[in-house]
Image (cartoon, rainbow, N blue to C red; front, side):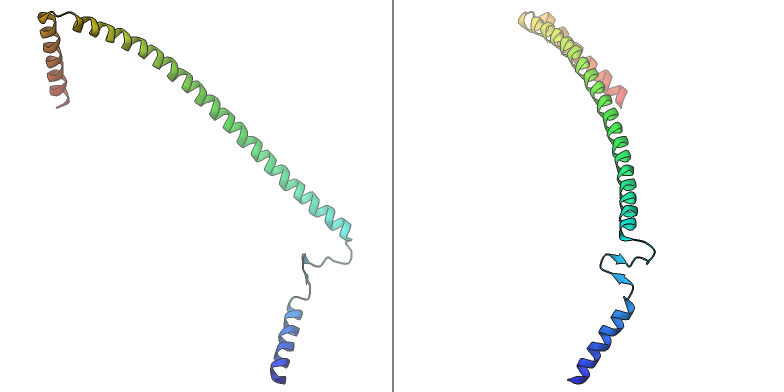
Length: 127
């Protein structure tokens, strides 16, 4: 048992010698510096780090603002294009309604024949 106790003491002694200059918060300050000067130095470094982060965040938010503005402009253009397409489509649908409401077989035959011809032309062009 005394051998085990001696090895523990040796371990603690070696550990204390190894970490002799290290305190819980870091390396012990030299005798020429006061703790107040060290605290001010650490505060200055922290302030510099924070100011760098604030500048980076400011640039990032500026980039995000520009991106949002460009997307809003793009959405406005798309909305205007959709409105004009809706107007054209409603006009076309009105014309189709007018064609289908008239019971003329000659108009219906012309319409079906034109769709078939258009389909064949598109088929041969894509082939």
